[in-house]
Image (cartoon, rainbow, N blue to C red; front, top):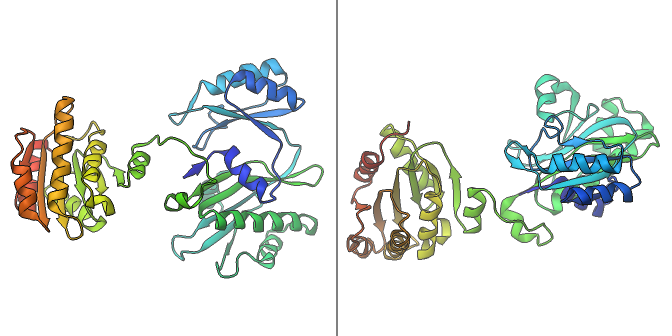
Length: 383
């Protein structure tokens, strides 16, 4: 789950990491009022879950309340990387003396938290890593002990920071790690972490991604409606990944789903998605929801349902398929052929339920290879 800047800064502030005074507005009039309440000298920052907002014109510095209104109007009517801007953060502008980068990710190789620091803040860390990897100092963190102050201090010394700047940055780093750890973070960063002309250390920006699997453990996280098809699938308990092919897939278990994808590729076709019913395969509603999710993709020309019932039952899954077919045919929304092959517990009962359907869109196959050939025959190859 990605947090907006103002949401991330809310967690930073609670953890004792200094952030600029600011107000979130969802209207231009609200931005004008925030400008006046903060006494001018503010920055308007578009709130969007995408990078590059500065280059896109999503960060502006008004010189009057009327200009704040006009600029906020412009920002709230723009899209950044196809994402509409619905809120603007009106924040007190900082007198910046020096900018740094400070962030923590879960290292994919060692599987532990990795703190990164650079004396060259304000630029994208991916660009810096590619062009000047030596400018990034790294600290692997042992979760048993957390981030130790001496670990950060050593890297700051190696980066050539003067002593008077080190304590404030060490404090920010340790608090940042605590937020990352307590909230099951995947990525957390301050870019830039600034030193003001008054010598204060302040998080001028904030980025925070929380592990999706951990979201239910944190009721303090913001609630927002699912926007992407992946997010809506996750809310239904389905593991869904959108791909670029044309043959939809519904299966149970990650391994079985991937084997279905391999079957398609073996026959020179391409999957339109990965959809694993997971534990929900024991309920008819799971397959019904899965079918509706798959058919949201307009590129799907045929659907393969490939189930091996070890824990679930084929007759339960078959009932879900029939319920979904009946609903979609009543709505006249079904135009796509479906090929089903069931295996495992209560296979005969499941196939009997499916074979009783009079839907012209449903085809049954006993063997997986035959089902794959049939779904490709019906759906064709992706363009």
